Length: 415
Image (cartoon, rainbow, N blue to C red):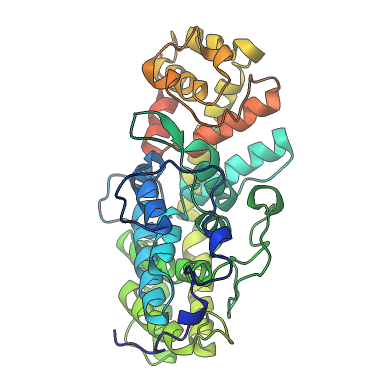
């Protein structure tokens, strides 16, 4: 695609010339250095996300349609790839920092629950019941990259990801559900973990984060229609409605290719530092019209009801079985004892949990090389309260793939 804006955002891009560069590239802890590393801070963030286990599991997480055996249905990983493609194309044309954009896009959905938004709703219900707060995947994504995901350093010691502020900010502020046009970055640097308490509370702090936020919407609406047609969720009348919508905007079709191409072009043509990252009124109206169609005929389709109930049963039962194992400082020992009945679920959870507890709690039950070599933040301490343990269960289940969720649930119903 030819350049449209002549890099009009070049003067405000995230770069060493930016007054806030040091704050945007700051990390919670100092990331260990690598000799002869030719990557900038955001390229390094990108590869750390790419190598993480949470990213790998996205290939078996539901986007909209639970169909893990169908290779042609969009998964969470494919959606992330679409967002990366859309956002980096826009960032390049506008003269923004492509590497920062790519890193945010790559990590933006790491906190998504298994079974898509159905799983997210059930985890939120459990959090409300036991902890008095909501679960939303944007905040959970920040929690994962800050405290949950671990990578080996050059000496095979597991450490936290320690991503830059700019990438962490882009992850928690990416919500693509909000109908906002003309996105502009906020000016205030906030404590992302403490201050960002609800969905869409703040805009991203960078222009690159704003690009990813809009690209998230552009990327999913067309692909969801494509999958709905493939799975016969849409009737002939629904498809006729889509055709009429396309004609209203003088286009031949409404599908992934058409939507992405036209809206990328429109964003690049209309955006400016004065107007923000924006679609024209015409294409913004079309985007919202397509979203309204999708909600009516796809996301609220009664054919999804059995899947919704299934996701609720699987997640709630896994949660209850694990919660029943709470014994304070003896919890890990209790999990090991229950492994005689549920070997995969209990042993895997005990292994995982031990990495985030104080050594004294897990030492005698978990003397393994990988447990000892964990120099990460011990976010669960010694499991001194049930609330801390509940958060640990939520963290663990939210990180599961659909496949693994089903695998360990089947242990519960197999005698």
